[in-house]
Length: 241
Image (spheres, rainbow, N blue to C red):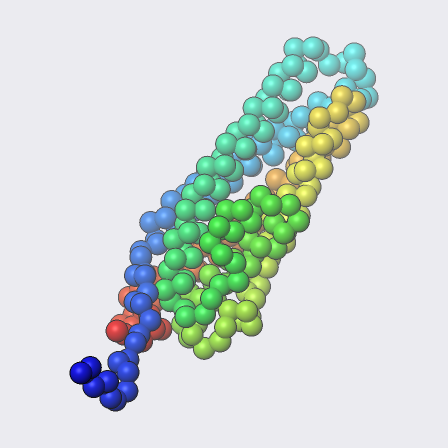
């Protein structure tokens, strides 16, 4: 004989416990310190750029009035400033991505709603053409909203888009486009193109500094929100097992 089938309601099942919310302040502080150093590099590069534009203006007005040694010195200094900008930007970018991954993991633990982009897009979103114009902003928007108190009240797809993130992203996109134009002009040989490229580069530096100031506030706000949720008695919106 077979045993009688059990009767009664099936046992209750619960979702797996969420990942713990991990401290993020150290990473945020490291990024902000590197960002401040990057801004200093940009300011110095901007001052060098102003001197380079003056050199080009004098060359255009009278090529014989500028000595070859001064031209070589100006070209070398301008090139070195560009390399310093690139190195500082890459260093900042790597630390920002590490912070972003930690912030995203915390955001997933703090809100039950799915994010609009899978985790690989935290990296690929910055490099894939066309879609890179909006995917990184969507990722930061969702992390921002998932980190706020009451994040479980509405899906991230319909949550308000923070104006601070919008401002940072607009400055970032504009600065990136202008820097791309500058790079193309600076690869040419004629003085007029070089002068235009140096001016575009100077404007791009200004936009990058604006973007840096805005992203610093974004990182601080998200970090503070997650740290406050971490200290709250019930940091997770999920039912306990």
